[in-house]
Image (cartoon, rainbow, N blue to C red; front, top):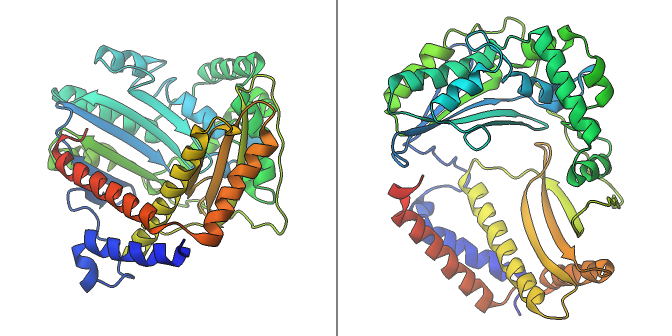
Length: 406
């Protein structure tokens, strides 16, 4: 067995092989953006990203990304970022009531799979896939995005109607995952604003917030300097850029924008432990998370480090999979991953296992023992060579399929 240092040295060699410019480029230099992607910014501060992709034919995907989520709510607005997302489908200046859904369905767009949105802690994202074979349909798609950006009606009758819908969802009961998350997130992020700003919000706020409180959230955070428009698909890049300028260039720049604060997640001296049960939970899951400062994704060095993490977790996952295949394995599955979690200040290295019945403690022990084995002794040279070959194959296949990517 070799120390993990061997893995890192070998991967550096691998990185040099797959990046011909690495030998003449400083690792501290920024990775240049993909020249195929058109990136621009309007005078009002809105950023746009456009990429022509001919597969599938005559289809484009549009996204409006708002750099504001539940973390931006005041105490009296808890749940309104998510509520605002709902209201975008309940009437805008050009599409009253539920006309957005009706109009897009007439174009063949399916609500749910091709028209949707989500609200996170830090962002709210609206997505639609539309046909691009008719100019009129492209214009409709851009008009919907523009309306979401600054022309949502927020009619009081529609607000009360949606208030009732969300309250009824609460009464019917959230799913087991939602209920358990509402209990363990405050523990995992103790001492941070994230512990107090779950996107689902608070039912008391939903029941009684004044109409102007929702309008204030919309006016404060839905502004062009906090927005990005993404256009990908079978459309000419210049034509798409002109559409962005036509529809979004007329949005007024905010005169006194409120700063978009970033909220760090603090470290902890002692382990934070949360044991959560729910009678509707489909099984027993164990998670162990190690918080780290958020990894960069700007320089060649950042990319090299991401390769280290990818190879590390991939080999460890193969070991855990081998254990899973054994009849005496205490878990149904187990794995490791590294990536962002909640908040922008930390990443998480995490281990998880789906324990068999009455095997929770044993699952934890076996999983952590394998993790400790890697920490002490590293991986074998054979494991590393197999992983390098697998990654080469992935890159080669990706290059060959580049023109077919949808």
